[in-house]
Length: 280
Image (tube, rainbow, N blue to C red):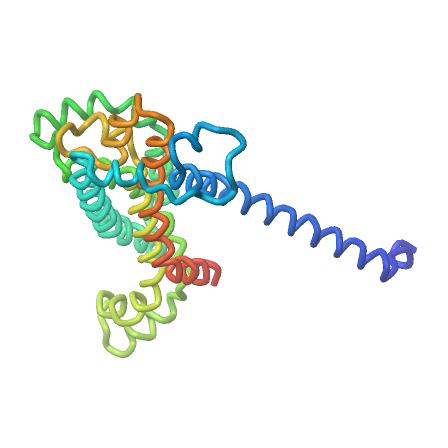
């Protein structure tokens, strides 16, 4: 009786309503991401008078005065270099540590495995400001204070949970039978991993490294507390723009956001490949 009440017309209406809801959600999500970036670009490429006026123009004036100010500002290029160095070291160390851990969680059964996974997540439960004073004291005593390597260690600690969980999901998407077939052909476990698993998992490993890079690039608290002369771009802009006028704040945000967007856009194919591997 109930099936008879479901007519083709009502089914089409349900499908149409679902499409409307889906498209609305996509539009809202795109607006949530793109509208702030649009206004950031508009205010960065406008004159100071236009930035402080209302309503704002829909097309930027292409006034590069704010960007030229930062290009010639003392310490700007050094901070940019420090950010690239710290983010690169974080990316490498998080993969070197996180990928083997993800492989072990995916391929081996051992006592306390689930507890270990929970503990990995709990490392993000402690706010960084709570650990700032002990970290500062430890770094001063060990000579790691105000160094790019010391800051990279902190950022690696923040990135490792994501690296472990992402690589765990990726390795779980690769059938273990492929490795077992390589073993029967005379490969050791390491050789099977290098020749069979690694080529399949490399796009996902690259995507995990991208997350680590972005985490380090955007982190500001540890960089502001643990460095003075070796500040990264985020900490440098936080210190510089505290009392700066509005147009310079927009320009500083633009300088901080654009390199990360360019980096993600350049390696976007690895992100898409990672989703494909994880969903196998």
